[in-house]
Length: 342
Picture 1 (cartoon, rainbow, N blue to C red):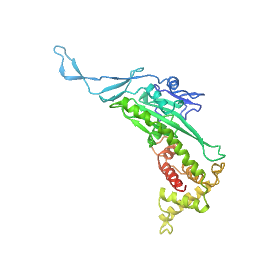
Picture 2: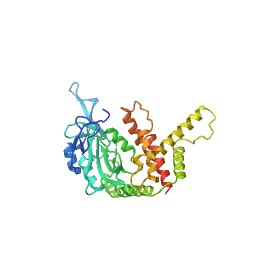
Picture 3: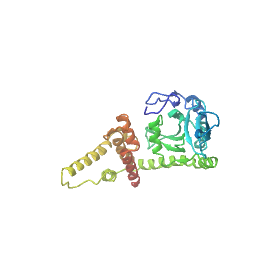
Picture 4: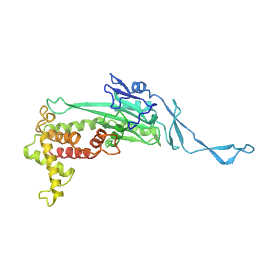
């Protein structure tokens, strides 16, 4: 199962069900503690000593019996099911699901949960907090939602991580997508002075709200920057050439002709999207914000995406491309170029 939600996992979602139809959907956004309880993931883990048989040291007088010997490190055992979730080193300190809920209040003292759950029989844990909702430009009705994702693992494969994201995490795929986008987040490993690291992490988390405010300010600046037809044309041509390749003015063979045709068709699609209803909202029409979203609309919904064996279906392939593949790279290029205009 690509979503990696097993029979011993739990999931709670606010208001909207997930694409896979699993989990408990609640009308009111729960607190972090309530989210653990509703999802049934308020269990704990314990680090236990591991032993192995030592065939080189038989017990005197006992045929077939052997001494046991302790192994370095330990096993992380889920206490409600007894399942071994992972094998870790001597200096590894478990971080409970309840600790993740407590950490949520370092992000916001009024933390509310969009989704929370476990994956792979409890090996991975995540909690998605509501971070904010904002509209760009005067008269704009469309809003953008932002989240803060807290995640960790009980198998030694992942640090304790907190970072902003726009991905609604509901399964393994969306968690993986969001983790790869953790460019502005914070993380600490389960080893060493974990208590001291967590103090530093809680202090650092105050910057998450500043990150969101900074992003909103940049978007507002784009929405307040009108573009002339010449500036608009230059923006689209420059974005294409930065993201892909220079547009050949005088093609010398069929390959170069196809490349030029593809480039011009793409830029023409971006120009056409300026007249789409999404780019004619409120006072943002004809601005750098509308130009940016013309590129984003094409990247997210109109660009041809090849499906591969790594994805279950075309929709998943598009989602991956939008978040971390070529579409994501194009959108980042367009955003950076748009900021140069203001």
